[in-house]
Image (cartoon, rainbow, N blue to C red; front, top):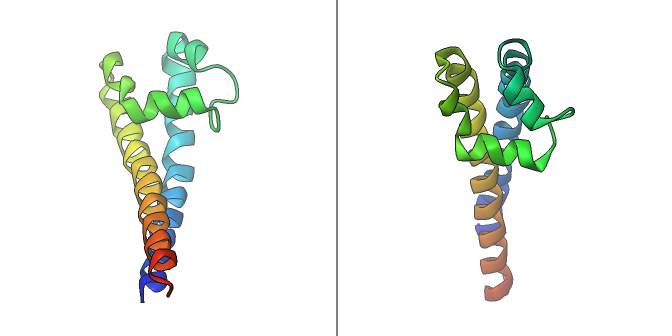
Length: 102
């Protein structure tokens, strides 16, 4: 049962990855078109760049004061937290099942 729940958390992380694949590129295009200083700071290829994902995770997009950017980046941030939380919960449940010998 524990491993089934861990697999369910992996499914939740996959759902978060799907949402990230939708909202993060939209936010990056908005940044590229309307905030060239932020785009220069994130650099080219920011989709998978760890520093850009950390920028998103910290919520630094709120410093721009652009409500449209917040509307695109907030769901991307929530989905990134969902990925991290789902994978962390699955890993902890896997450890628990391994420790219990199930």
